[in-house]
Image 1: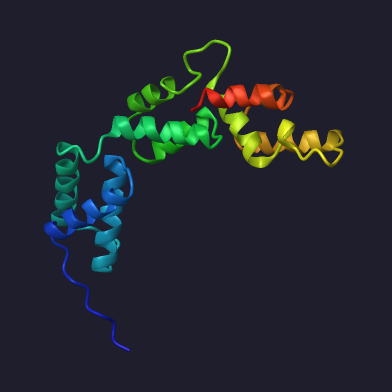
Image 2 (image 1 turned 135 degrees about the vertical axis):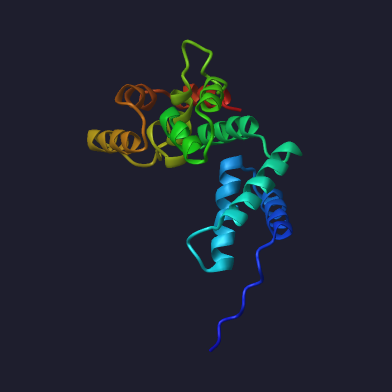
Length: 189
């Protein structure tokens, strides 16, 4: 069976692809460049991207930024808040934003703007840990129709540690009541 001939990559195609992608997902400039690069690689059946295609990709990304379709600062703040609500600790949020190609200064701004970052008593990691407990059914969110021993408590601490939470945060959050956890979660909204 013969392989279907791919259409050539043009700058207009890359613009349409970028607009389609940005219509579905929020993105950083670096992430958009990666997405468009993968599209060129698939269309040309080549791992290497020639300089003409690379120039088009950068041009399209610059145009999208100029028109306001992408804004790294807004993306970083929005993504950091979403990850916090999902129960990701600060280090994991930083790593995710770095992976998406966000500038380190913008990452720092996004982390300091998180709920709990300005308060002395509540940290962003504690809010994320409370969300993690609720999602996993740990601590005060355990089923009440069963009895649990200390080994269950240790398994929950181990799971939280693997998720990136410090031992101190794990111990402190696991000992809170459901009402105290709900108060913590209300800070993330």
